[in-house]
Each structure stands twice: as structure tokens, then as C-alpha cells.
Image (cartoon, rainbow, N blue to C red):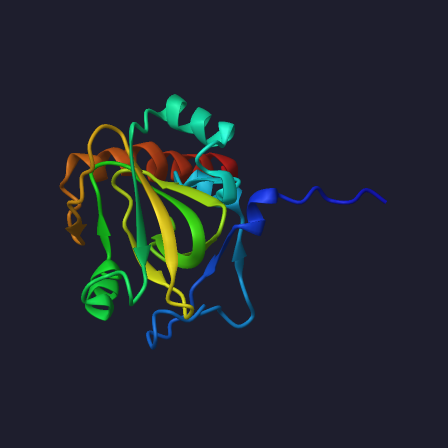
Length: 199
């Protein structure tokens, strides 16, 4: 019997479809029964992921290669928790408003965990749970949101090409060039592929 090769990234990143319950954004909100989403399916939406050595991020050659190949020249570290983030609850609620950016959003979880929610092709929420060691890249133009989980702690490295850009465009901002480019590159391509496969 051939044993399936386990994707090492799943130790730090897991994804599933959200239920319709809007109470307490910090809970997992699995559907019943649970409906998991593969990291390969996330990649089809433009969401890239790696599992890295968070304990040695300062000397990690794999992180260095990713940064060099993708041009991530700027880096800082932030902690999302009640003791470190001013106006914590209000700020976490603000992060949870659906929005997009005109540049990639790159987050590397060094400790703790949190949820990043993205939309699939049918505009249905997928919850992406990122834990210690998970590096995730959201493409420019994808609608998403963030919340810590019930542990209320995430230490994350934020990476940027060039200087940091913090501007979030709350939905709807479908007219932005970054959104149009995202739709053309990912959504339209996948829909066309699905139509061809069913023909």
C-alpha cells in the first residue's frame, strides 16, 4: 500500500469553508460536516504558502531565498495581542472588515496563530488558519480579512516589496486596476478552464 505524501505546509497552514454563523469571529466556524480546502486550491486563487523554521527566521536560508526571488526588501515584526496593540478589540474588528490591497500582503507567523479569510470563485469565504512557521502571500486585488483566533495572539513578520504600504480598500473597490488584474489573472482563467473541462 502506497502511503500518501503529507504536505508539510499543512502543519502550519490549514484551510476550510466557513459556516454562516457570524458570532465571535475568533472561533473556527467549520461547516457541519467540515469541508477542508487544499493548499493547492488556495494557490489556484493566487494564495501562496510555505512552511518555514520560525525559531531561526533570522538565519533561515529558505526565507532568504524567498525574499530575494520575490523582491521582499522591507520587513518588520508586529504582535497582535491585547498587551501590545493599542485599542486591541477595535483594531481586530477593523482588520476583519473585508478589503483588498493594491500590493501583495505577505505574513509570516513567528508565534501564535490567526485566521485569514479569502473568497473563492463563487464569493464564498474560505478560512485560512496560519500557525507558527506558516508564510502566506495574498495577491494584490484579492478580497480578504484577518482576525486572531481565540488565543488572542499572533506575532507576524510583515514583508513588502520596497517600502510598506498600509492602505486597505474596503469592499467594494472592483474598479481598482489591482482588482481587475486579479480577476483577469486568476478568476477568469480558472472559470475558462472549468468551462473547457466540461465541454
